Length: 536
Image 1: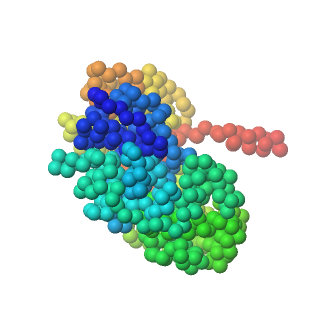
Image 2: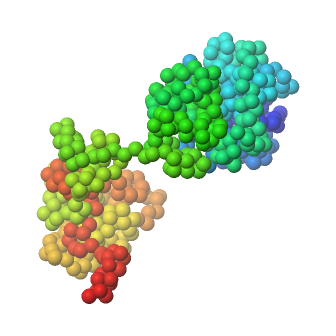
Image 3: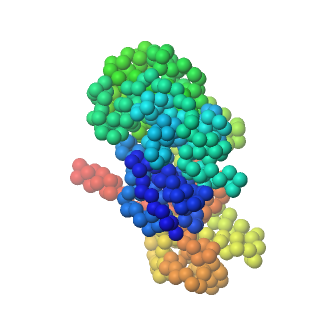
């Protein structure tokens, strides 16, 4: 398919290489295989099928493709992976607000001096705001049309704008090598970051840090803190030459990666200044402005150990004192608004996470009475009576009612019933009446009802849902033969319990598991019983 197969250049990004390869073979647009798009970000690691397509068509090793992606490089700069799909310090493509939002950057001098112009992967790193080689500020938009620049945007072009040359703006065709960039004074910071990326050489001014991942994660946490309102008074201590004290820290849910390059540069410089002379400089400011460890809680999962240990040991923890009158007032306010009074609703209204007073005043029974079970079964019977027979809704309702009865008879959650085979269900029905309980007569009626519903489900409902070519081992299925996990049944029962049920009852189908019999004794309770027996 491709006659020319150019190899990636040093530090080149995946999208830049693919754009160059496409243009070399006469393609106007960004080359990609047929089918759904692999990744929203073209510099993230593609799916396996797309990696194989690239490897076969361009005769390049799979591990070489991985080294062109942000996953390979930025993942080395952070310890905590998996909390978010977006990597820290990854600039965002396709931002709509061009004036205030971020975008990938480029150095016009690098493009001009390259024998073969290409876009570097590290131009996607949000902490690099200047070129360490040419000592100029990096640009994040075309100087002619103000559009964000990155090779991957070419894939969205129409034939009226066939700009696929990598040195041209994909929107207006302006030659990016002719862009004018301002000289940057703080060249030391750019060199420091670049040395960390390439050689892992840590700066001497931050002696508390031992790895580059700890450095960049700590820098990211401090940047995020400076963008929040609690850091308002901290800016008064930061040298004015590092920032213009713009009100960007008042923006809600702002990430450092989402800021434009000018604001981002000021925040990063200020955060790095806080990291220097650690911890004396930071603690001096924290004491003056009254910082607490809870102010860093939004980014607690990402804080490196050198920062977490200081926050826990040196900064105070702010505590909000809640009395019983506060809780009663919150309960009354929620009830007056017509909303459900719950522990979560009260805690959110009071602005707290945990409270023994809330747990005491809003306690929930996790075991329903026999009368409450009869009330729930009556609601199912009523809905089945008024539901049209010709609708799939009647079939689904019958299946759900049967699962609920089996859950009550077997004393297991509905998910356990949904995973059973037909043989397991028949065994449940045959042994249900022999479990031993205080309501044997009522349990016998439930067993008869479950038998009748199971016969109806076997003859009329399951064949209706089952797809012939599918082999399904579990007994309960949804439409098109899909496995029925029970989530919709939980939601149905919770909705039924919103009305007519006592306020103190836990609104869950699990409340009825041990209504007909005693709950099994836990291992901890058995140990307590042994201790009590031995003491007597």
